[in-house]
Length: 108
Image 1 (cartoon, rainbow, N blue to C red):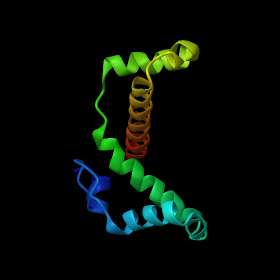
Image 2: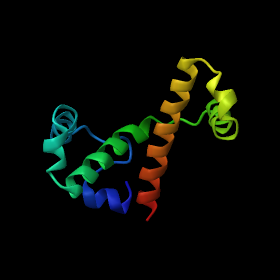
Image 3: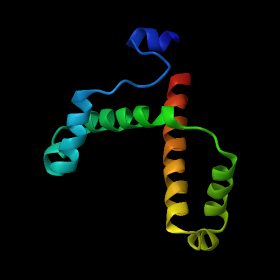
Image 4: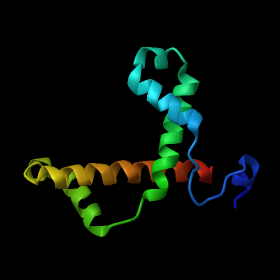
């Protein structure tokens, strides 16, 4: 356990689910106007919570990395791939981004 995690009472393994944040996420989906009224700090906390929930599921995959590179370098070719493959690559990119953000902030 790192010093930061000891201070916050978290372990490195995986972020624990929180009913409070899950309720805020549901509020955002069901009533976006009410969620917007909660304030920027609350919105950022919910985003951070979502990233922390998503990050532990990241697993480096060389094939996915090559498809990400294809998406960036040749969008027209990437668009020719099946919808399922494109969706899988987008999901991988989202999880990778969450992993990078969470780990970058832990290093600071």
